[in-house]
Image (tube, rainbow over all chains, first blue to last red; front, side, top):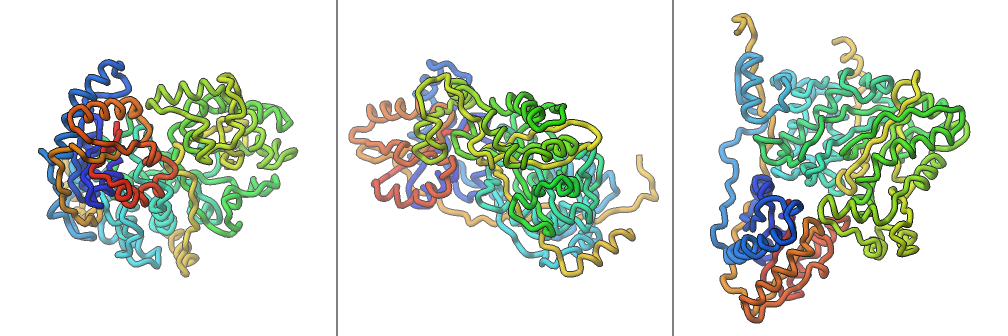
Length: 465
Length: 106
């Protein structure tokens, strides 16, 4: 929202932005990143929990005078840019392991867990696993407008506990973050987005990623440290820090996701395309796909030797977990739920159905009454969910307004192809799980991992250390 | 408690250079009489209630003030955000807008 105000200002038109009290510090940080003073009209408190009378009172007695003052440029805070920051690649501290941890913790450079000290030697080892120039800048990332350089990826990769040979994959992660449609500028929003990295292709084996039992648990170095890297990078380069930092407004939140790898040999064995192939890549391509996740379902156990028995359980078990948030996707026409499908279940389903047939079934049967969707939208953020407008805008197909019956059942997923399916987890059990995204914020986005010419040598050396 | 044999670590800065071009403040409008004010809205947090009320209050104070309502711009934080923001300067100029109220962040 402040970005819209900054565009008006850049066009020479004065603006004032309405911000709730709890968001003033984030607004200050964004304003610094935008590089211009932006007047704020503060709404005291939380607009969604005030009565109509209180809300109107605050509009008149708080917002109105603040808007008038803001447009008149009274008491506008100047932008204070960080000054005297170190040069990239410079040594900023010397001390023991404990002292390094404290130094980083005090400056909000860690995630609260111990970090591996990013020494020159360690960082050089990472840089030795890519042919990219350390000074190369992939993009300037919101919200602090820091340069996402190859060097910054190496430093944070070291800190996260990654191994040097993960470097090409870490670069691909940041390339996805830098995609404009990925909207990394929204990664500090209140639902608390945790980005999920899905790894496809030969690099799964190269880096020893877990795709089996406990695939989404901390425990395997590659899965865990790559997931941690994402969170550290969001903190240190984008500026998404929970208090005492300012940029991450996740209201409650949860911890970072470990990287997810598919059991591709199993997927091939049952005759299904891999997730990477479905994202448009060749079987030999190593690929990173990322998407936002705001929650996951309970473990969904399903039984039976036929596809339908399992698909019905997915509707029963995952559907309710998805429904309360589905309006966010319907209002915006994009929502990419992901299902991590237990291998034994995938084998049963694949004996009768293609992946598309499974998707179609879930799309068709996960529904909710229209009035319930409208109610949920109003409860969360006072968002009017106007199906007619969404159809007019092309976000939804016409069947959403086929009748005016408030009890009409509407699909919670806009298109079958929006459902991602990854075969992973314990092949010795019958469990699956669903992951819920945050609509257009962090839509499923892939990037082929660019491996250096000496990749085979890098891996050979890595196995010796 | 420290082991005196423990090695020291010389560590690199984990952040990166800030690349911001600072811009000067736009001149303010001490009097909104006769001015055109645009409403930008992210379609959340009761802007549908706040904007009509603000319109009325401002009209009472500033004769001749007029508004370009948020419906003219679309959702500034929705699926078409990029396209809407790219076209915003031209649209504001074409509508003769003198000031912008942007909401609502909460």
